[in-house]
Image (cartoon, rainbow, N blue to C red; front, side, top):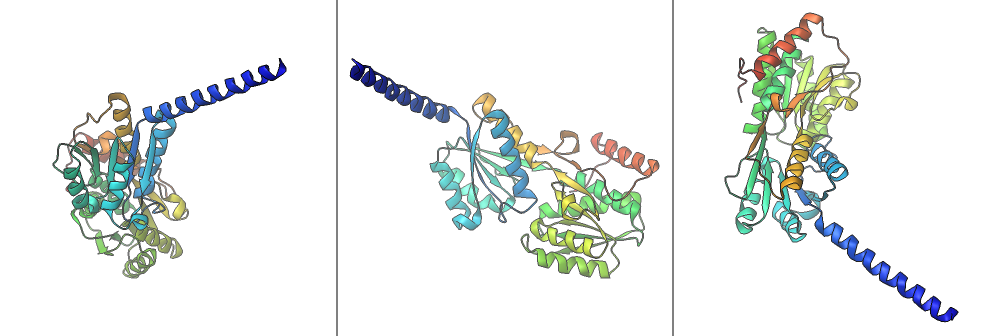
Length: 325
């Protein structure tokens, strides 16, 4: 009798285990799955890719999605990474950065039933949603602060590569500087590289030698070098894309927040709620919480200066000020 009881008990365990495995598989299969091909520098850029990753982590934790990613250094080229993500059965595949545009266009044509997103570029295909930001608006406010606080009337800008996208950062910055200090001069340099912090240090040192006392980099990991060199020489700087205060806690005034994490979470929410993307192409600015400023630290703004920044923000949101791309 004991023998048959044991057999029945073991049989019940096996059945329950099988049911549990089926339920687990079913649960995983039911989840929304997103794949992302990161920008060229990849994770650890302390900027663009990291911000996108944080947004998908939030979507995983709060919305229950699953996500995976590929880095260029691991797969060799964008097409390989995109195809790997397609083969995984992801519901949505995101290409991060304008440099992926050509490869994503080719793959999107090859897989017309797959949903894609490209960030920082526009692809005119029915299965691709384009997400862009009004970087010039947030950069305007950075420039406004630099213009009102500079003592040398010389401020600097370091871009990664000289592209239309990075020009949006520069143009907004220049317009902001001019709004608060028409006499200030903006020195701009392009590194030609988003992944070389040592080059960023070198360029920052050159700008500082020319008198720049505030420097705004839009250069990925190259910009990290800019921030570190500015702190080394006691010069103020600004972060970009995410809050980069921790890179130079004595000298990073604020950061131009390009809220890629917000965009990633918004896309994931749309996908979870509707089973597909229902949003048209997105362009996110100050009024959409797409861009903005991190807390202002290490310097103090007078009440008059704070009011001026608030007024400029309101004027941009109301279209009383149009910031040039």
